[in-house]
Image 1 (cartoon, rainbow, N blue to C red):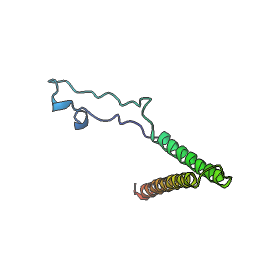
Image 2 (spheres, one colour):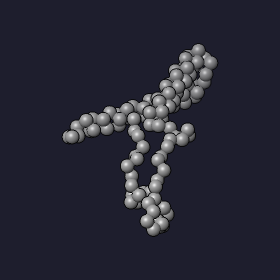
Image 3 (cartoon, rainbow, N blue to C red):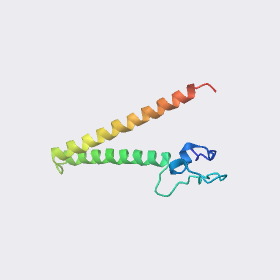
Image 4 (cartoon, rainbow, N blue to C red):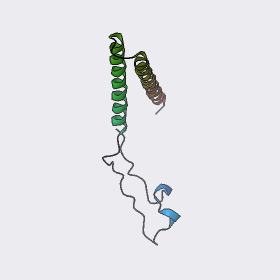
Amino acid sequence: MISPLSGLGATDPLIQPPGGAQAAGAAAVAPAPTQSPDQDSFAQTFKDVAANARDTMRQGEAAAIAGLGGEATIQEVVEAMMGAEQQLRTALAIRDRVVAAYQEVSRMQI
């Protein structure tokens, strides 16, 4: 779990007020970053992406079955299958990047 940075000091340029002006003798105090309800964590975002990919794959499968039954046009089946294929490729690319990042971190010397 990634925790917010709490060790930033008043001399950090990222938390200086615009123009860099400070009151004489007073240190600027940055409020601790909090996660508001509209901000998602990485894990939640990853879950949402996986759920979206799963749902798209299910829709593609349902369209293929409907096409076999004569309930959907060929165009609808092809569009659903292309969307499912694109989602699958995206999910695999994300998985490959996460695995590569993990392997790179695991190779780092401490």
